[in-house]
Image (cartoon, rainbow, N blue to C red; front, side, top):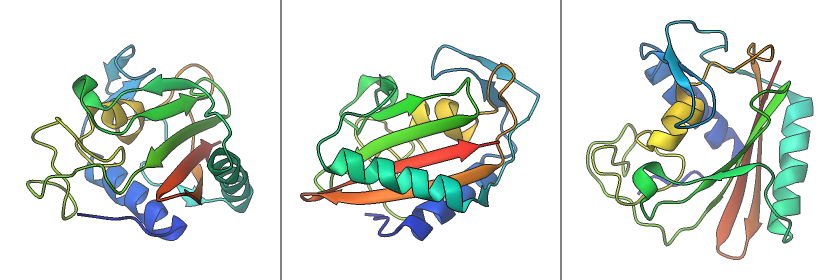
Length: 173
């Protein structure tokens, strides 16, 4: 199973999957409620930004301390048992994704971009796997919406909560 163990590994993971999906049509709008588009306004890969990194880390620590996630809860593709994500601010200058990664969440060892990722089934999985349809339209293919559609910077936060890790990704203009 592919385990992401540090903020820098998560940043590299984000870069790799967005790069891998760079040939795919983009998506404009919230998961499952937007539209496919040929226009790409976000950077395919992001520059690491220390200010966004600090914000993301502070949010991850807040969540690990028992805080509630901000934004809308989006289920793993097809309403399966996979880990959900929370998305906030797609139509603002900073878009945030928060998710709790549980080591008990099963991941198949077939067909993924990284070892352990299965993008062919969708019956369970880590929120950050390449094949999670919600993350595909919500982030991996995302090009933003409205006037705030030029994201090029990224910050990553991660904080341990028991056996789990709260991850936060913030992308900004």
